[in-house]
Amino acid sequence: MIKEVKEKESVFESLSDLGHEQVVYCHDKASGLKAIIGVHNTVLGPAVGGTRMWMYENEAQALHDVLRLSRGMTFKNAVAGLNAGGGKAVIIGDARKHKNESLLRAFGNFIENLNGKYITAEDVGMTARDMEFIKMQTDYVSGLPDYLGGLGDPSPHTAYGTYMGMKAAAKVAYGKDSLEGKKVTVQGVGSVGKMLIEYLIKENCEVFVSDYYQDRLQEVANQHKVTAVGLEEIYDVEADIYSPCALGATINDDSLSRLKCDIIVGCANNQLEDEEKHGDQCIDKNIIYAPDFVVNSGGVINVYSEFMGGGEKWTQAYTEMIYDKSLKILQTSYNERKNSQQVAIESAMERINSIASIH
Image (cartoon, rainbow, N blue to C red; front, side, top):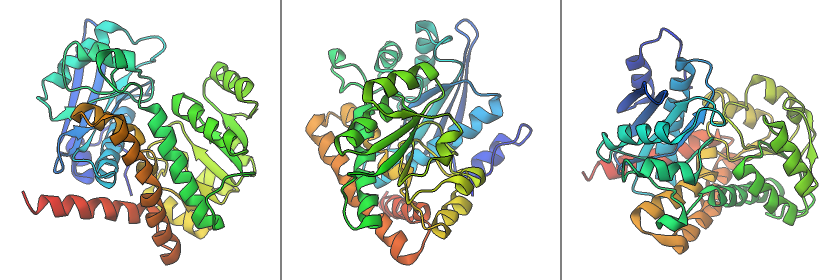
């Protein structure tokens, strides 16, 4: 279980609970930057994980998010087979209103000061163009535009990996990995969710979508001829597959009492509000839950490949491995009636501990 960070709770207590190595608070008065960088574990290598910009209600909420996200990156990078540890950063603010060159370059200075312990890339609210501004201040950044020698937006690889994970889950649930005719609800139609929808349409799925931004929702609904529903209504649509592709913690007491599906597979991070409780509830409801950090690792595979000079073919090969890795974890979970999140974490920690022993 991950305990939510309370307003007056000691930051050191939170770090101890989740096993973090370092948390950095970043403030630049001139640009208005307020950010937090979380470095969870660097046993396998430098911490790699994107930067998210979001309108957090308070600093405690931002800290809670960055701690969960950076921890998840440790497991994600380990399962993906990368020589990288787990890290993440959040910038507090509305990306549509507050993001600008000076803020991003100021943030780049803070990353530079970590001397390579943390390598960033884009996440929710950030783009490849934003990485270009951060790059002006530090070399510890990936996900750069192709005209700067980067592999570009990692979103297509995140979407493809999630699609691979969805097919693996279908194989366990239905005996075959075809998604043809399946009814899928996609919560969140940002860059990754939108690309995932394209794969679903090609397999002749019936797709329902929701999103926080109504203009984006209508654009995607009109473009792909999918059905738009409300933010809350998405949980009540009877579907074969629920795909959370926005923010985390959407699998909780309320949603699990309403969801009518066989499978949960999405590209959002930290989908389970409580890993133990809600992972177990999925088992009790006979829902196959594909651990998010396993299926959505295509993006960080692309980011790591770019930074290490691996190239597009290397990225594609590692992203396609998500199918087999997901299938193995989900089959173990299904056969043993065991929380799939715990199965995946055990797989990640087995690799981390084995590498730690040879240092």
